[in-house]
Image (spheres, rainbow, N blue to C red):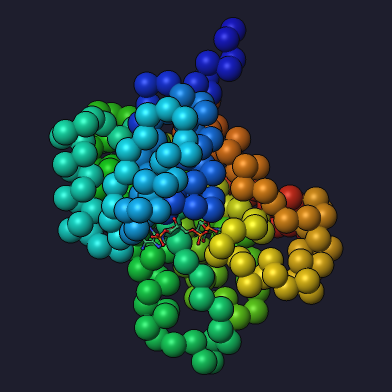
Length: 253
Ligand code: NDP
């Protein structure tokens, strides 16, 4: 049996939201390395063009804000009509805001929910409508260790990433019978811009090293294997799960 062929993404096209940098960019590079054509997304056209120039293979860029449903529908429907099917969607765009819950500004709560949860509805539904017509498609939602566990000063983020886990189950339940597989990846602590304040805090880094069985921060490339698996034929009977890639953090107290 040609087992590696199960993971081959040649001939597939993948849209990764929030892929100008960080985890989204690493996943775009990783899927391209498995043969997929990748579509980079973010709100800054220059940053996307620069990111695309660093990926080998066919790349496209789609500029939209993942909280803006009409803009998303216009961009994705035009892409499907002009260029072709989007077979794989990774809902990765996300944000963080750290503040004690009693002081947390209402507008930051609103922005966080729109970016981390509404975006899954907006981009997920728009892509799924096309996938359902074809009877196949893969959607991967990016959760977090906070899909399972809380930490001080990020209660709204924890709520939003908890929602990602259950939304994934709901999408798999509604769209599984229509030929789609919808799963989530929950990363532990990875060094990216989103976590810059924590990376630069030696006390926090020491806590990550002590709290994580792997004894260190994750490297964004360590998320690629999970993303390729969940994007490929290898996961044809996997639906509704959240795969924790966290160096073992969620396994222990
Ligand atoms: P970064 O802040 O490094 O990158 C975020 C990306 O999303 C950028 O490309 C940004 O581009 C884009 N983006 C932000 N808001 C929007 C929006 N409204 N519409 C479209 N694109 C947007 O974040 P990370 O790579 O660290 O995080 C990516 C995902 O992984 C998030 O969902 C995060 O919650 C999750 N995660 C991260 C962890 C970590 O340790 N880093 C751990 C667990 C989960 P631009 O600003 O130009 O639009």
